[in-house]
Picture: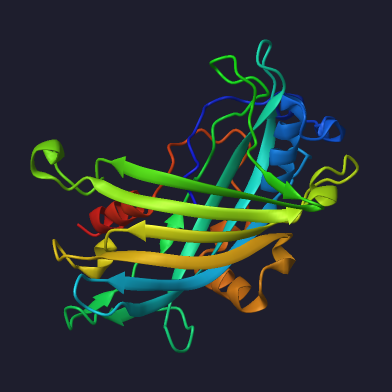
Length: 294
């Protein structure tokens, strides 16, 4: 779940001093920029600099071809492991940045086993499956005041003790697998991600709590995955998944922890707080895999 991302080369004061920073603004609630930013940090990670948090999700990927019934193609399951680092700013206020990496594994539609090869029902060909392993997936620093001078927003809907937040993220950018003339001949990557987050207000705004529990729904409309070898065939994919912030690694389901430990051991932990590498996507990762085999 990487669309609300960016990357930055800033180091945090907590990192430079080797200390642990705590935000102290959650009690302000949602009526101030500082309170909204603290709530957002509590959603995303931990109020303690460097402390790791895991998100986990599971769902299904479908194929959609005009004039044909949609097909259930495979299951998906993944995690994102992240940590936050405080970033002070003299004019914009004390903020933070999120540092993470994530995997998404494609699984057999019937058994749930991790796929190595997959028979494409549209082409009849058996193809090698290349799973998502994006390192890093970072966000730029967020502050109570934004660059344009406006206050940090957090457009939550609340009712009683419940809160929820819906966000759609259109994506349209040059495809990393394309050439130098995409604006003339097409090939631009085009997708949309849609998220629903929800949780409890007393948990989110508890100034004595280090983190908040939340549940997440995820829908992604996208082009065919490159390893499916679909070329320019008409159609698209959609992913429908749900999950939650599980906190510690031990709260990731045991069978998926086995997958991580056997195939993706790096993803037991988040990147360091001073990570300033460009973000990885499933397309740039696929390109690296292919180029490494040349």
